[in-house]
Image (cartoon, rainbow, N blue to C red; front, side):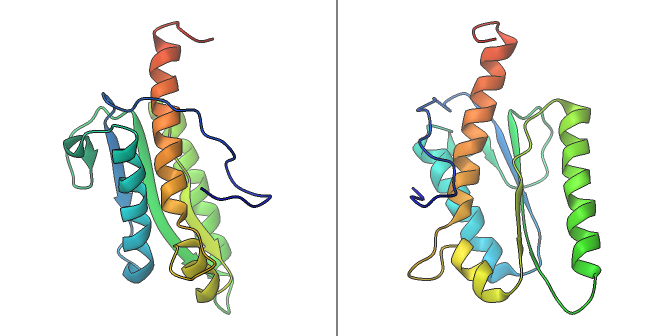
Length: 152
């Protein structure tokens, strides 16, 4: 787990046994996307999400959480800002429209070295996909508890 000033801190040990989690990912930057997807899957499995309930292809819902994964690397134009803003708003809209937790699995970095570090591809890096998997279980499980009136 990440131990710096930033990061999720301690994660409550919630059971993901009955959760269905959808992972959708970009095809751009596959050398970065693949380890992020694998990191998310690893954490989902560790939290009890069954392999068949980790969906990475087009199948019907409902889902308990969605993890969209992408990497935006800033270039020399404002293109980066436009895409980052549009993706952020789109993911928020998805969550609001469907009432399903959408984990913000988008790396927005200034250069490829930062992306590699956040994908866990450097000695001093950390795979943020793992954090996204943890967050999906936490939010999906808590959503069920809220719906059942167990927590308020």
